[in-house]
Length: 516
Image 1: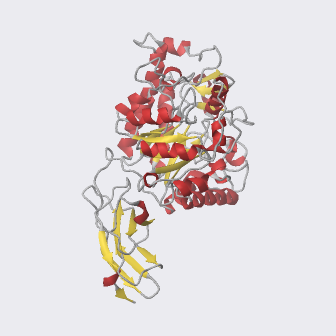
Image 2: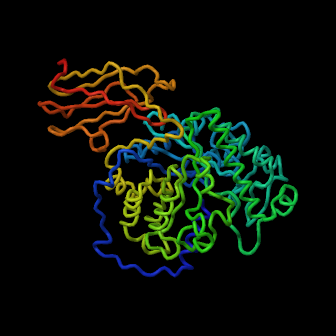
Image 3: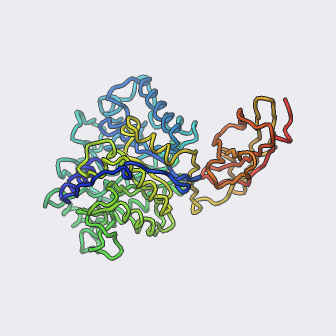
């Protein structure tokens, strides 16, 4: 993702961004009722490449790394987030105990060296997220093999074992997407994680074929000559290579663990309208379809991916790529899959050529647009700027005031679990305690994974679609309400399965409570 950031900054500079005068109206944002949602995917990209987000530096002790993970997960839970997208394979290396690739240099300081005393960052991150009711999506860079800041390459690295798979281009190295054995290898690496780790999702970023550097084309003439088959156009052939990887990976995940989601975060522009009437009214230099070999619309239409998180890192009103135009375009081209806005929250706190980002209301306005066009959530790039700035507080105040449930994916599972069994309400002068039992399995064999408690203020009926009535999302089978009214207060409890389908509610009333 780092290269895309450089390209966007250059794009903004070349676009001669017009000065924007901030007014009192510009600098404020007042949320409305539509800005508070019961279901929404709220995630952040946790970048491990070059220690950008985690760990804070190379060679940290096991204990300090674990402390940083706990601090990070607790921070996002308290701020209203419900998922992390954790970069586990930044450059054909691993932030987990891989069966195929060496430990990342950015874990211990030397590629190939495991943490001592041993721990597995991915397993630990999953544990801490699930403990707090959050999803963990494992983020893979499919093709990158070397980053310019490497100090040491392990002899077990794929660039050493299979040097003929590697292409040098633009000062970096990557695997050749046109080689069938490369496609099989990447899928094997991904499926090793799906098989051995309790991940909720697999996530690919935008690095497929590389962004073009100057006038020099990616040097894959020999691969094209060997494997082009009936293709005459190299760009069509390149897209088909990426299509095969996406399709085969999707099918393998669904076969092994149907509940694991598959998502991709491409550049925010599929194609410009001037090149394709189906494209967006934008004018960016290297759209993903034309330059990266990424036909996102096909992946959505064929149902190969469960969600797309387009990196829409531009401002509202940008001359070449207006955020408003892009949000509306993606909403109209979802093919009934989820669209999570990939949002440049880092731009709100860093030096930017686009002066619109100096307005603190820019990100809030983008979030409000997401809701206007019914996007299912957001992923923010990236963790460290969010944890060290005012941005997370603003998000919590304006949008994440209430906890949110993750949206369902009915194409994967539409069968709800059974409701909580044998609910009971006990009351004392100081508190009310709700308890229940885990019910039997539903018709699909699933039992609940967590529960929700709803409560309405005195005189108000509980509305399951109103997020302010949702007071707890939890795994525990008891909940204590310390702020109770003396008069009747109603509670509802529901069950949820792994893919967040909700049961019918069970109602309890404090007026009928058993005193203790």
